[in-house]
Length: 199
Image 1 (tube, rainbow, N blue to C red):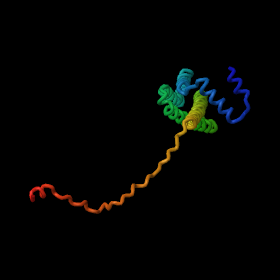
Image 2: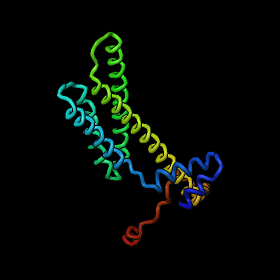
Image 3: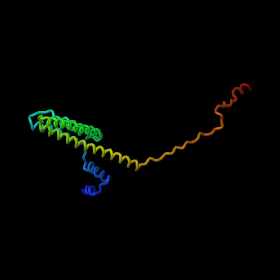
């Protein structure tokens, strides 16, 4: 708690805001794997609650589960640290898609209500809650990805600063100067056997 007090009492500079964000996401240990699993279970629970409350069935009631099952699966996959970044990226895109589809469905239901048609209140509540959950997860995952990239960049820069690469100088030596003519034929040596035969 002392570290929390120190951070909260600091001034509102950029470095302190980054430190607070890093503290919340790292020190409190908020892995995106658990967050994805929780949000997936919540989306699946929305469909189960909608089906158990009323006997009127609508395809809108199954939309939260359509996003909850793959998000739950991606949360389980992201428990592996080597696959976490890819799984979180897919889950972020899925949550963004759920937010867009939920907003589109709310727009259709609003037009239906304005036109005098019947709007199932349970379906409307399910779509509102699903859109809110998807939006919250997309924002949290986006902040987590930005913080992860910022941490990786800062670690790379600190490692480069602590271990600077030595400058290597390459000196070119001139080729040795020879006075011999490379195109001159070597001298013919006398054959000792011929001299022996002649004598």
